[in-house]
Figure (cartoon, one colour):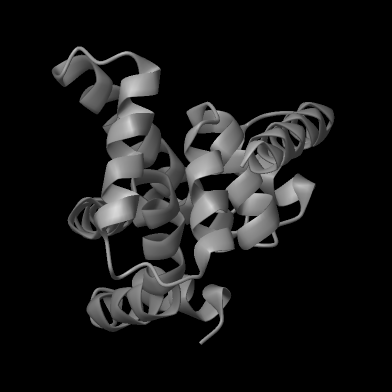
Length: 179
């Protein structure tokens, strides 16, 4: 079902639940993996994905359609990730590098993230990036989003995103060359 149809059905009380179920089916996996790449832990990603769709349900009626539906959902997911990581840092009074170390430890101990040694090294390198830079890299590299779409999601200029992605790539290359 196309986004336009989902939005139309959502406006009618008798088809609202069906429309929302279609929306969740269409975007749940993409949102989960977008979140999972940021928070690493499956349980945290699962909880945050549910929170994202609760917010989508609550606010979908007011969606202005001035952006694409999936970029709006990604923006909600991105904000949930950043808020979660920020709260985690504050809750445990951890400097940024300690949160990265904790996420790296989870990455090492998780068996649900498949991948060979190179993939694991890439994930560890990504955890060394600042959260927003990691988001830009994930959305461009893994989600294959265009800079214009990322710009809508993050509210950042295309030029700044290109620079951020370039810097992230350089940092990752440096990290991977060390080992």
